[in-house]
Structures are given as structure tokens and as C-alpha cells.
Amino acid sequence: MSDCIFCKIAGGEIPAKVSYRDEEMIAFDDISPKAPVHVLIIPREHLATLNDPGPEQEGLLGRMMTRAALIAKERGVAESGYRVLVNCNPDGGQEVFHLHLHLIGGRKLGPMA
Amino acid sequence: MSDCIFCKIAGGEIPAKVSYRDEEMIAFDDISPKAPVHVLIIPREHLATLNDPGPEQEGLLGRMMTRAALIAKERGVAESGYRVLVNCNPDGGQEVFHLHLHLIGGRKLGPMA
Image (cartoon, rainbow over all chains, first blue to last red; front, side, top):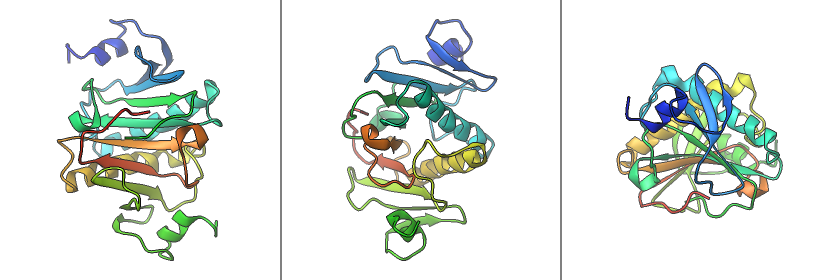
């Protein structure tokens, strides 16, 4: 997936403000934040959309969710509140076709859709 | 958790338009839909917020995510697009304190926060 910007971030070819990385995922600040806290959590594996994971990726998806909650705690928004979301395909507003979770917090959030 | 409305829905004490159920989760239509498709996916286990799952619930969380994608496909919005999200605590807009995923689609969605 040589043209995927998120694969390049995961591979270190494009710089990002990375706050977490392990063998299966990385987390970094969104370059166009919609709130004081706006972190993206992506799998290293290239999966285009949320339609793509199968049973073999369910553990990974769950770990990405709990990682989002842990990052929310680190950023001090776990108790005030936050939103974790995945946009899929055009109606969902997906812009980069490498699966990613948005973690958004640090202010009172607006409508969810 | 006798006062939890989602526990009561999971237990069949309160009716809901249930579209999926298994031993660990159920899915049902949101009674105040924000879009043509608005389904909630909840674990049967009472977990108040996304801050609560630990490593032992990661598989469940991942299966809830892939279930959301499967329901999106059943409802005909997998390709047009949808959003899957969790609101946590007040700033996130959480209203019922039993962990739930929102699956929202069927129209071009607005800003995510």
C-alpha cells in the first residue's frame, strides 16, 4: 500500500506526533484537530475500512478501543468525557482509506452525526 | 444493575426493536434515531462506560465492532457509508451509562464532534 499516507506514518516515512506504538498499532495526533484532544489510532496492517476486518482482527479492534480509552486517561479527558468513532465510506465522512479510530475530547462535543 | 434501562432491554423486560442477539451482546434500533439507520449495540454485561473494559473484554469490544459492520451491510449502508461511535461521559454526550456503540448511516453524516 505504497500510496497510503497512514501506512507511511506507521512506517515512519512521514512524521507524526506519535503518542503510542506497539507491534500492531500506532496512535498520533490528528493534524486537523476538531477538539483539544484529537488522536487517531490505526492498525499497522492496511485495512481500508471498517467493512474489512474479519474474525481474525477482532482482538486488534478491541485492543484499539481500550487503547483509545487509555489515551483518553493520559490526556486527562477520561472523566470529563470523549468520543471514539470510526467513519466508514463517503456518507460516514471517511477521508483516509486506512481504518482509523478518532479519539476526540477536551470540550463539550456536539451532535454525533 | 436493576435500574439500568439497557440491562432491562437485554433481559427482555423492556421491549425494543432487536435486530441481533447472541450470548454476549444485543443490537436494537435507537428510539430517537439521528439518521435513517441508527442501531445500538450493547454488551449484555453491564459496563458503564468505555473507561471500564479491561483486557478480558477486548474480544467482546472487537466483536461488537465487526457486528456493527455486519449490521451496516444488512441495512444496505456498508458501501454508502456509516459511522460507529461510543460516547463516554458528559463531554462525549453519553446519556445511558451502559456501554453502547451507535451505528449511524443512511444519509450523508455531519461533523463528527
